[in-house]
Image 1 (cartoon, one colour):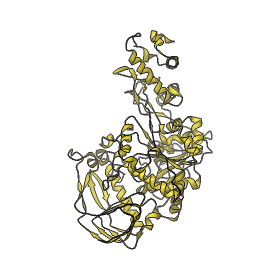
Image 2 (cartoon, helix red, strand yellow):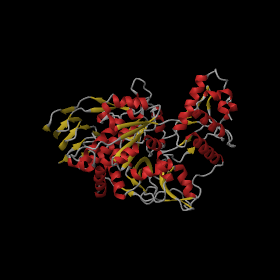
Image 3 (tube, helix red, strand yellow):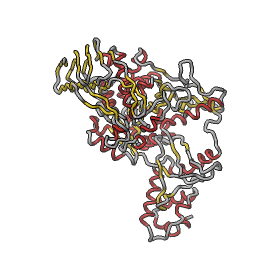
Image 4 (cartoon, one colour):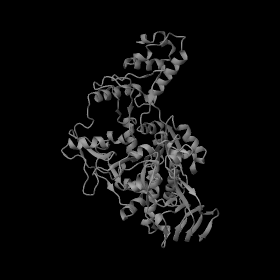
Length: 600
């Protein structure tokens, strides 16, 4: 058994010997093949065994399960097996919301009530390299009018929900978990600590670090050694599906359950519009009693975004799941829909676009994870050298996605979706300037440029809806992308948490010109018969009530273009293609409680 190791076997503890035997039993003799006898490189050997122990303990079922799953998935991949064989697609049931109508308002208010029974989970394992930004993605500004970063933006929304849902009673602290990786853990902690957790209590926030998984060098799932170091296994990220096993193994779900929580909301790191959709979607979950609720946006047929689909197997199994766009069309064609994925009368595909934000009911979630240990159905994506599929160009690994959680659920599980307009709910920042400029006209850019402009568009449209005369946007090309430039309107989450709240703070007839900037930093700021042509910043403590009215006119802030290749400018501006020149503004600050009128 231990012959490959020779006398090195005696260096190991009984527990380590068990682990080594397991590797040898599972076709991994090669990792020990070139080991010299005891007394040479013993420290490196010990480090190798420590790494194997870590890889074993961080995967549900250990390395033995990982290797077994890998062999099966690699065999299926080589054989070209279709994961959807035997399944027929159909349109699942869900709720489609129209912003500001009676139904939307009802769900939004219900969601605010439910928020005190919710916990939030942010998957933030990524760096901004793909965007042309060297920091962690959650440190990027959502918009550059106020410079608020994504992490602050998310925390302020959770705190606003916390306050609104407790309605003057003792505030229940809403727990917030951030899944980090080796790449982001230290920097995420530093961002929180250096900003006093953006107003949260440090004990409200839990960081769970995701470990990487072993790489595989061939179809036999042999573990890939680092070419530079024979005492190290190559590792790569396993994907954000790890969030489920981390939550399960940390024991935090039980703590939440014992505290009477009912919902867990999962979201990704750079969608600045998401929380405009959270209250109403949570209201849908509570009203419809969904075990799983996927947030979605209308999608055009064949658009490059996964579609939420019901799949029914010939053996009776069924599931509601995200199907990637390049798989959905052929699946439909193979199932008796000759035209594949086509738009319905309303101009959109009947399969809504998945935006990777999930709301799970905690009780059924714990039940399911107790059964699976948090393991999520994986996939493998080897890059083969040639058509024989016998060899890989480079090592591969198993991956899993957070949104594949429903794949193991029983048919009795209530799995639904909530569709909201993309202008309200979805503006992810994931493409760099060069890639975004190549996106076909009319398709979303999903860049830092479009992400920021989407915030202004949504806020402008919301104020229009409550009766403010907001000027139409102008179209400008920034970083090679044609975008609508609306007035630069921003507000703190506690000011504009829901549609009803915004409506209650806007009175009379107000107007905002296209070149204007309006930043509302405070809870009790009322806009009444205000005419704005320029820049206005209102900053007030919570118990200062400010009534802003009259005519504000100044030179304002001008928008200037920035070349994304201009190394004299900071990265956060280069990836946007513009910056603000703060020529002139009216800035009103209220640091004391009381009632105030802002009249220029």
